[in-house]
Amino acid sequence: MRQAQHTLTIATRGKGLVEFTAEVRQWVRTQGIADGLLTIFCRHTSASLLIQENADPDVQTDIANYFEDIAPETRDYVHDTEGPDDMPAHIRAALTGVQLSIPVSGGKPVLSTWQGIYLFEHRRAPHHREVVLHLIGE
Amino acid sequence: MRQAQHTLTIATRGKGLVEFTAEVRQWVRTQGIADGLLTIFCRHTSASLLIQENADPDVQTDIANYFEDIAPETRDYVHDTEGPDDMPAHIRAALTGVQLSIPVSGGKPVLSTWQGIYLFEHRRAPHHREVVLHLIGE
Amino acid sequence: MRQAQHTLTIATRGKGLVEFTAEVRQWVRTQGIADGLLTIFCRHTSASLLIQENADPDVQTDIANYFEDIAPETRDYVHDTEGPDDMPAHIRAALTGVQLSIPVSGGKPVLSTWQGIYLFEHRRAPHHREVVLHLIGE
Image (tube, rainbow over all chains, first blue to last red; front, side, top):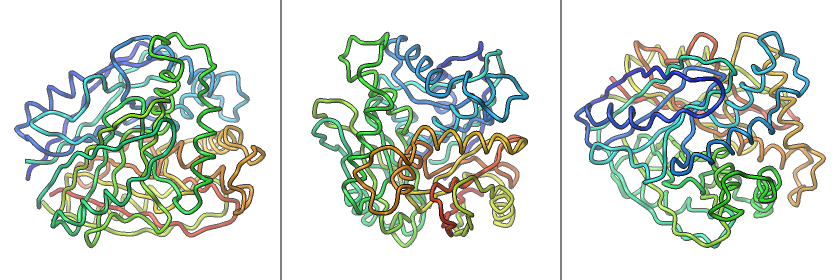
């Protein structure tokens, strides 16, 4: 049994979903671990992780619109010193989560055909987001 | 240290929660791993996983009703080519998640008495849903 | 490769977030495992786990207020025999989740500076909540 760890940096262009399935797949493929467990952890409280359909980009638009409405900037927040988009960002991250674990088989995460791995940026400004990958197996 | 992996297929009858705690417990019990970590991964973007109370079935009704209201079919979605229940299904899956990890002790997941493991079907039509189980430990 | 498991009991004072990052860090530090994967599992269906900003306590207030509004006690629930705060508690737990996994490096969870680990109590009354920690690595 072995393990490996790696940090990806993902550039975002403000609010929205950024797919990074290919980067994850490539890292997993090169670790020499055929079967195991992959964990992805986002080191931020105003960005989160999602597995979602990557076939139709409209799905990403609808998801982004939905979270704009369900945790709006216009709500009256106590915490407002970091801008109107900061507290909604924390709430959206709480609703979607900052960690994913995916079994690995034959050197690949067991995602189905249409499942993509996304970083969900919740701030208006572009950011560089750190995502830690951990793989254990043999 | 050892690991094991298995795919369960869960039949759903359209929208609603399907408990599969017994199937998970049985598989874990027969792997010869007393202590470790169990991960459950749903290979779909319109169904998700939940740990919820399995004492009173009314809880499942209220949860299903709640998600009908919070991510309604009647909302105006851009992605609507797969039916009015498809985009709400993606949103409900984003809000609840497709993966669970549970420590295992003495050959059993450390669930409490009333915690059950559920597949949450978000589409109207019955489906067969694939859930991958991964267990690592000794 | 080794593993360790431990149960923390967290006292809550009714609804709200209780940070227990320090207890988690201390337990991880004393297991003699430098690199690995930490999993935290909440054995309840009316309390949940969150990673959130621990810099400004107002963030916790806004999060608590938000979940009061989004899954209110005043909604009409079928399951109402355990008090008006019980069914909203189950829904809030479904929205936030009962499990977190965090890679460990150099004997520490790879949390960023402002990420804290919280138990989110959803019931009005104070409770003692059991949280199981599992660590695997070497």
